[in-house]
Image 1 (tube, rainbow, N blue to C red):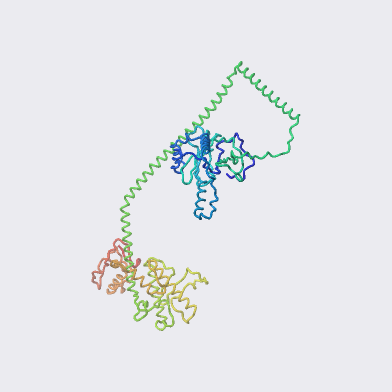
Image 2: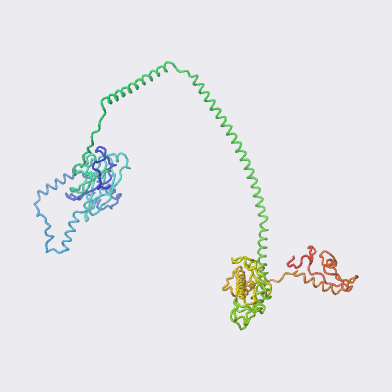
Length: 612
């Protein structure tokens, strides 16, 4: 609570000051005189810690809360000490002039000053006591090394009414010098109604051990008179006239007469009611009507409750049926799961086997492609110089130096082989290339349907993989861009197999690396499935039939005729019967596979592989 801007007049009347209004306490001009003997409770306090609980235990152990010395005893001790001082011989008055003597050095002067300061400062805490309460209602913190103390504010409004509403309290101060033990300093019995309002602590000369009380409305003390400003002088307010006062008096008397008349009438009504008891038949009829209305309402409520009950029963029945049906379906599903578990395992094994077979077939195909399109290094050439099918192909660079060794036709032929191999690899590896390729030998081309080109005509999106005639600059640029698109397709195939291309300009090295990785593996390369190209067997049969003499009409059976179809029909006897050559039967011309259960003809089905 601030003490610099206090009101000039207190808000609390003296008779209204209670302990709950006390917010803080201050001590001014600490003084240890008159000294008194150190009692047992002082020694206990000197050994106790600074905590509130420890101080309270120390006060209990020493019994000072009950048997502490009162202010009367302290005054008696002061008189005794003063009387004993009279009997003693007078001592020489101590002077401080010796401090300025040149004989003492600076250290002794500093020591003297420290002793004087230590004699005037100390450590202090206080306790608040209320009548009929054994323990203190509040124990303050310990303020150290000072002569003027401002203790922390506290709140006593949340205590029980017997404590917070009292106006008498006892304040006990305990002090300790820096090198001494705790001692009982002061006890004051305070009546808050007798405090004097001082307003502020500034410009005040307090006596020794002066107590200052901080209440809600300002600062109070016993050591100074009241400092209350006079009430403000305001102009007199005109009062009511005599006629107005008489009118108010007449109105008041009229009101009192009306109240008396009301009481008299009420008394008469009560007497009449007591003499003539009222007829209760009408009231009974009203009660019957009310009861009938209540019965009707209750019957309607019962009907609504019955309908709701029936609906709930029906809903519960439907739910039970749905639950039973769901359980049956769950049982059927569990049976299906149990029955299909073995089929699932077989399907998983079949999928794994199929994946292994697909991987093996890809290895075989890539190995065969490596043999069909051999990519070998060029002898006596720089590193990363390769040729495909003995046709050299540079790494995306065709300048005058390379043109001396590789002609334009050779370059176009090499690019055509690379285009053919790349286009077929996309099908074998099951990965679509971003730029379509059109292998036409040395006149192959590619198409860009992704990039944004300035001209949207369809012809401008086709780029040749061969050098243009006449040395056109635009044609040269289109050829180089087509070669770039071919390299991007090779890079896409490598990325589909998890390969990282270092330089996309190396067409043949990247393609050879792709074929090498796709054909690599720890297992042997699987062989081609039996029952391969049936067109070869057709040619063999036709070559055998060509040795036979012409028919009776002078013509041999032509391809696709009824005789030929009869010879090749799988369900006919002619397929498995020996073929006659020059009127004699030729054995062993039947197909090495049986297709009695398949309606199959070479003319309609063509080439097939892996037919079970």
